[in-house]
Image (tube, rainbow, N blue to C red; front, top):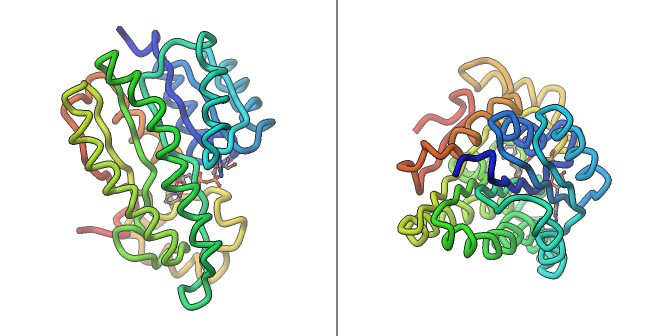
Length: 253
Ligand code: NAD
């Protein structure tokens, strides 16, 4: 069955200038039907409309808080019947925070983990059984260079710890689902030009960061989307449990 008969679920693809939106477009251009789950219902629907119009695939946008199991159940129920079976999941929805460790509260710590880790669990736990049953699946996690180098970009300890948790999640899940035809990989972007920092990373700090990037620029969302689409291809079935850096050389290891 080719990807034209399958659906890719992308969480957090509502954000206009975000990695998820670009990924939804790139996957659709490759023939995937697309389901967008985002906290912001209006942007999820608008993104789905844009994707369907541009690529001529089926696309559905649903408002969903991935931290809430009932909300995820309801969103996935909307897709049932409206779109072909889920063949790919991109765990893209995420939040960051620069709060220093000596100031971070338990509430903030929990919130960062709730979206980045528990949210990814809530969605993956629900779509993985179908993938395993059908013998095909592609799961991609959005980790971060912050997980690998220990912050140093924008996100603090909570964010770096949550993004590192996604790497363990990726590797262990790849081991379990490999026998069922499901690959699980992570991408670890460096500084990508999106709105995730809410404009809080500008000026001198940004210039300093760019000075430390060998290719001499911040990343574009398409840089990340292309890599994700590659990992979702049917032909990429022998790559699993891997973390792919996409950081312009800002962290070489
Ligand atoms: P973004 O802020 O542009 O988009 C994030 C999207 O997630 C938004 O549309 C938001 O509404 C959605 N979202 C937030 N909480 C949600 C929830 N509880 N349920 C459903 N949706 C929710 O972010 P981005 O920069 O495109 O980042 C996408 C992913 O890439 C994130 O996981 C982020 O941690 C990771 N990442 C980003 C960068 C970067 O420099 N931009 C670097 C490394 C990793």
